Image (cartoon, rainbow, N blue to C red; front, side, top):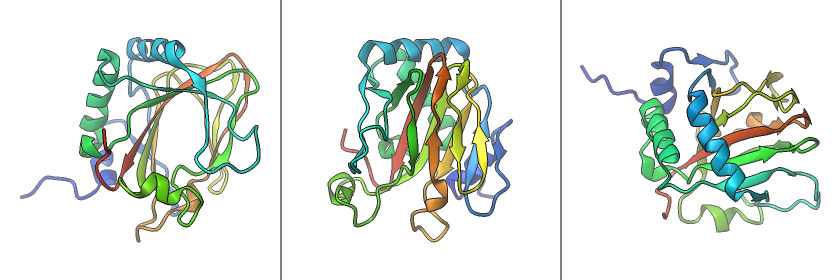
Length: 211
């Protein structure tokens, strides 16, 4: 009998401790303590070393739409290699389909207003960002620290809000079952009210990423 999972969702569901949100409009999972406090601290140090102002693909005229800082993590760093190994063990996605891991830091008052992670078909930058590797398929996001106040991730359409917890993973399919993009994945990185928030984001594509 073939014991290989037929989909990313099936692979995720086999992992001990993972929880799927019981909602028909989205394929979304949560896994607490996905990374250790030690690995989280190492990743935070890497983000602090190389962070820069965040940008968005399709400019919308709102200079305050995404006010965090971003860091493209060096794949040669031992902490990043350990993280990549954990991702693959969890989701069984071919690593060649993954974008480089990205870190973000949110200071007091910073946020990422409601957005989706996929590139809007027909949008001004769709061809630029999707011509080689295709659309984004899955998003994997990890909270690296506790936030004193604020900093939750709110999925407005489905009415679900997740609070930051050190090492907690959220992951979701950016597509519907028919392969079309899923607007129900709209989410808001809400303002940090006290302290700072650190997260890791890993996106996967339809075709290999040109490293």
